[in-house]
Structures are given as structure tokens and as C-alpha cells.
Image 1 (spheres, rainbow over the protein chains, first blue to last red):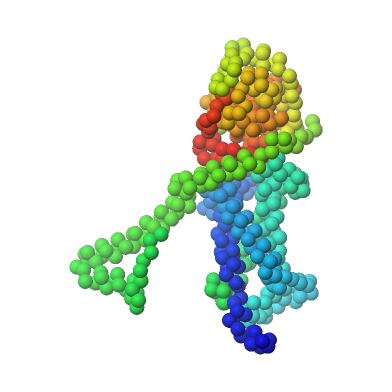
Image 2: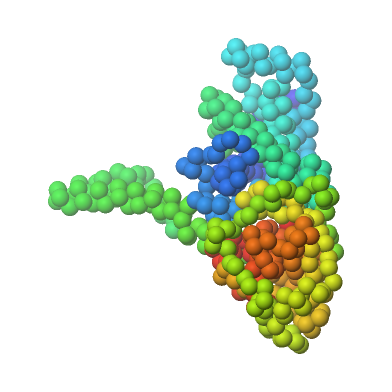
Amino acid sequence: MTAETMAISPERRIIHPLWVRITHWINALAILVMIGSGWQIYNASPLFDFTFSRSYALGNWLGGALLWHFAAMWLLVINGLVYLILGFATGRFRRKLVPIRPSHVIADLKAALTFRLSHDDLSRYNAVQKLLYAGVIVVGIIVVLSGLSIWKPVQFQELTWLFGGYEVARYVHFFAMAAIVAFLVVHVVLALIVPKSVRAMITGR
Amino acid sequence: MRTRKAIPGVDPKLLIRDAASVMPDPARRRFLRGAASVGALALLTGCDIIDGDTAENALRVVSRFNDKVQAALFDPDKLAPTYSESDITRPFPFNAYYSLDEAPRIDPATYRLEISGLVDNRKPWTLEELYKLPEHSQITRHVCVEGWSAIGSWQGALLSDFLKRIGADTRAGYIFFRCAEGYTNTIDMATALHPQTQMSFKFDHQTLPRAYGFPMKIRMPTKLGFKQPKYVVAMEVTNENRGGYWSNQGYNWFSGL
């Protein structure tokens, strides 16, 4: 088969395989529940001089929020593990997310900010996308590990120690959440600007 | 979930409107309004499912599963990290579901620790007798379910030693505690036998102040703060998990650290 026929075969036109789409939307649900309930838990003992509005917090009260948080964690972690394993095993991470060159990131960022970045080929990520998608995977791992370290600071004390102890790990968990929220804002805004990217994450094409 | 069979070539919305069009006028209005409020109701119950009792009951099933996971994760030999004198949080916070004014005042002269359940010797213990037990000391982190933590220094008898002394059946599943202010709590036997689980009679080498649970608190550095009974007046060795003040309200029962 030549490169040209490869390009038009149906398999090639699938931008996101089914496993990516399923894990993406399960993750979307899980992370929203984790963030909403996390905000309610934060409000019980705020780290900073502010609390989250109760209209965005999930669970009504601390006990309710904890129930949500420690139920959705299973969804987040199991789904996340499936995603990571398949991402590495299928070679998708290697194909799509690397290499990330700083010069490309700067060039693509400039192009994006002047609205000259091309979205013609959704199957190829530009350097800014690669950086954000790889980055949010790393932050996702940090949010789970820092969460485990404040949930089980005795049984997983070695992990808690790695995060600088219980009190520091709380801040790590908070800032990892904040980074995910920041990613989410950019991610959702850009997806709405390029609606065909949303379609691709639903239908695969 | 109920599935609705679509009739090929028929739009269900148009079908409803067509059906309504053959009805007399008032009936038609009621029908359409009814359909709208069913939708509104569905939306309302949707909110209810997210923040209401229905969801909480389902989530409590997961919470009970999490109890089992935490019991499996619990390593009976793993010690909670210990700290130095200079790490102690001063003043150590008073924290309860009542104000300090309302905290129990217990007369040390008449105090008796009641013992019941699966034990050989049910004789109640006076404070004088309890104070004679070999002393164990720890400086550990108290972690509150709210998220904050504080480092404290506690001295008292090891619960595992005490259980041995009273001839407790340590194959039983739980220890149930009753406290002077009405608080109750059940803990798992594995935690009761943990080498840092202490019947604390002192805080920072001074007689346990009323704020921290005079005359006796059960200190478990392997569990969240709300699991730790203060002003303990009765202890029962049992095979029945009777929950406790906080877990009965929806907080996770095991609440291990």
C-alpha cells in the first residue's frame, strides 16, 4: 500500500480511537465530580483567604462531599490507569505527544495568539497542544499521588514524605487542582472555537 | 433504563403535538403543560440526585466498600511518623461538636471505666488504677477530617496491653466506646491492637486537660481525629459494629490514615 492510499483508508481517518473517546468522557465526568467535591472539602478548612461558592461545590456538606470524592476517585484512577496503559501500549503517546521542542512551542504559541494556527489536520497536535496534553497528564498523576498522600499519610507515609509531608502535600494537591482547572478553561474554550474537535472526540472523525 | 422504540420516519415531538391537536382545547393545554412540568420535575429530581439523600445512600455503599479497602491497606506493624518536642502545635486546638463550656466535667474521685463484652474480667477501673498502668509516650500528628492537622504529645497505657490485662478476646471484631458527652464509636480490633493506640491520660506530660478529654482519650495516630473518643466512660469488646456519632451521620466509618 502506498502512503497515498494509506492516507485515505478509513482506519487512517479515525482521529481518536474508541478507547480514547470513552476514557476522555469518563475522565471528564470524574474530574468534574472530584473538583466540585474537592472545593466543598477545601471550604471545611481553607488553605487561603477564600472559599469556593457553594453553588459550584458538590455534596452540600463536608460529609457528603467526602462521599463523592472517595467514590469518584475510583472512577478517576481506574479510568486514568486504562488510559495510561493504552496510551503507552498503542504508541499513541509516542506518536502524538512527543517530541515537544521549545522553539516549536514558541512559534505555535505566537501563531495561535495571532489566530494563524492551522487546525486543518486534527490528527496532528501542534506543539502547544502537545505541551498542554502531556502536561495535564503529568499534573493528573500528581493530583492523584498527592491525594493518596493526604488520604493515607500513615500507610503511604513514604509518598507523603516525597511530597514534603502532610501539610505541604495539601498545597500540592490544591495547586495540581488549580492547574487542571486552568487547563480545563483553555481546553473547553478552544474546543468551542474549533467545534469539529468536539465532534472528533465524540464520533472519532 | 426504559427504552423507547422509535417509529421509523416519525418525529416523537411532532407526534405528541399531533396527538394534542385532536384534543379539546383545555385538555390540550393541560396535556402540553403536563409534559412540560414532567420535564421540569425530571430536572429537579436530577438536581436532587446530585445533592440529595438518594445519592448519599448510593455513595454510602461505596463508603462501606472503602472501609474494606482501608482495612486491607492497614498494616498492623506500620507506625505513624513521630515528631520532636519542638514540633508540637501550641496551643493544641480544642475541637468538638460542642463548645468547651459544654464539655463534660468528670469527677476523678468517682470516675469508673466500665468494661463489658467479650472479656474475662469486667471489673470497673478507677482512675488511680488506670494511672498505675505502664506508660507509653508518643508525639504524633492529629489529622482532622476537615483537612487541618496538629502535632500533639500524649502519654498513657497501650490499649493492646490493657486488653491483655482484662482478658479480652482479641479475635473479636471491634471495640465499642461510650463517652460522657454522648459520643460513641466503634473501632476495628486491628487498630485497637496497633502499637501506637493509646489510652491517653496525659497531654504533653500533664494530666489530660478537660479540653482534650479528661480523664481519658483513646489516641489512634492511624485514624482521623473524629474517630478518637474523649471523656471515655465505657469500653466493650464486641463482634458487632455499632458505628459511632460521626459515621452514623455519613462520615466514613474506618477513616484510617
